[in-house]
Image (cartoon, rainbow, N blue to C red; front, side):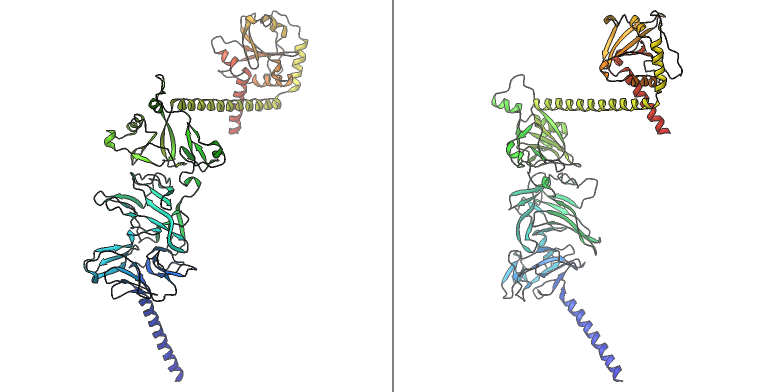
Length: 638
């Protein structure tokens, strides 16, 4: 009986404990702050979708505490906004609170009821103000009766740009909505790195150090992407868009994201000066989709004026065509920030100084492809161009001596440059085309160098192929040639006692063998290799014309003794090429060997371009090339 009683009271105690635990959790989470309901430790203000949470936090190893917004149920805390960045409360203060003050503003009070931070807006009905945390992480102060927004944290960005927040500028009010990094990973106070939308047309994003020194820039906005971020291809749907309102004067980057998805995203500016697009899937870890600067070429102006940076090359910096380092000493040391200067003065500059002659040729434009467009661009309104296209843009720049470069960008139009081109980066994909103004001498000189390089490369390739063909065919000829049979041919030739009046042919023991001619007879028909009979000379020897008694005309090639070819190699090669027949080949009639003399006898073709064979590729080479082609085809079909 007593045992049953103990079980009963144990059950009652468990239910009561569970109830108080639930009540405690419920009381820790509130959904609005009013003049009568303040936020104090350890309470948190929670967004309706349970994604964001606002409360008091203290960074690791810090003696301070702050009011901030972070992702709920995320450990460690991923803080996205901090109220009192410059006025922390000590961790020893156990009774700070965030409340609605008597003037209707949000007030952060320390334990002594001193105001540490305030929203500082003009509120007409001070008693009805309410603060809530919206589903997109925006802390909103609104009129509790009308619902009018009086103040919200999205207009006061920190180091994190959330979807729906304001990141830009207002030309009418002069307000700037910039991101500012933490001083360090554990110190939320204002760091020296800022990110901003530059007030120019079209706008671009800048990361600056100490508020002024450029550290990185995105390139101008072109309808759906920043041109200096190749990853923002127009083929993919980007969550970013740029909105400009002439009515309100506000220009800002709009970040669209659906929190109904299973993951969250934001743009983070680190204390090290890196802008990161990060995300986290539900239950997963944080990951980085994109970041900049990522390499040395991303850093602003690393190669100086008129220098271009390519991370894939070594060194990474080179002067644009027509320019040379301003200081060769510094350039060779790897200090490229001094940039480059022109080698040849522009005609416009010569005209201005009176140095141009009447025969001076006009400046032109060099196309530089796939680059990040330089800084200090200016947009040319289509009204000034009469008609907006690439040619009109070029003519506008050409007719304006102050214009040193132009670009026509899809989604923007005509951009021009009037001063030193800085922060040019070479991309491997998704870059833009820049047209650089150069003196005529630079453009012509560049074309000559290009032609010379192409010629040298072509000659090298052709020469390599010819050598490879010769080596391969001679090797195959050695394998297939019958040394014994060709030796017998030589003996027959030496014992031959043919008349000088007719050409004598040796008896062929095999259909593949080629006839051997008597040397004396060849001397007779070529008039002892008379210059009058000489048809021409090539790299392998001279060619002479002769005429047989039967009226047939022949061409005799007298191979040079400096060719380096041995007798056995020569005979094997002749046996090989005698097997080849083709309508475009000069037919081989025979050959002759007499001591150091090696002669080839071909049919004479008066109606064809025999000189092409004599002064171009050698007779033998024609057969060897065809033989190689046939061999390769047969091998591939085997």
